[in-house]
Image (cartoon, rainbow, N blue to C red; front, side, top):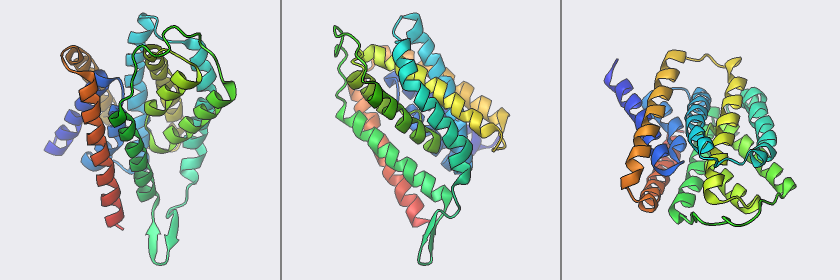
Length: 268
């Protein structure tokens, strides 16, 4: 195993640690690690990311389920349109995208560049959410869960589409939707979000099995290391200020998103 591969696998542990520390955000780093360190094709990297994100989120959701911090009714209402959107996106939309996507004069924007730039834009949105850091642990604790069914379904579809294209879990979109639209308490929203992310990511990955050649050995090693990192991060979180960590991580994601956009556009 060469040094670059070792660095990539070490990054998998760090992704898991970040998930364990702040309960999200780490999945946004999976695609860049796979593409820029391990040299995986961007389209295939989004498929791998779905498996990694789905598996690690499932482990995290299990912890919340044991504590009774998952609202299954809300999960179903949100998840059904999200499941449909992410599966159809991976099965049909991504393979259907032309390569190049479009041309401006002699400049051709390839599918790989387009996906990475779109992914970077999602990273910028995620970073703003983490930097603003308006998390309120006690929000909605005493409010009854109320459903705005059309908006929840629409949000689920949008998140599913984004997840299908870029391979990110979309927790930074799901959690605000659950808090605002379903009036879930913050802790309940996080647990419910992890379950939704796990299910839709793994379902989305099923859409890739017939269209992509999967290196199962590499993927399972990477996923296993990421899951190990979750437990490390969870143990570390007891001694680290979550607010400061989340804000710092948000700035890191912001810089990485800017870097990806710059790198991809200068490679044209």
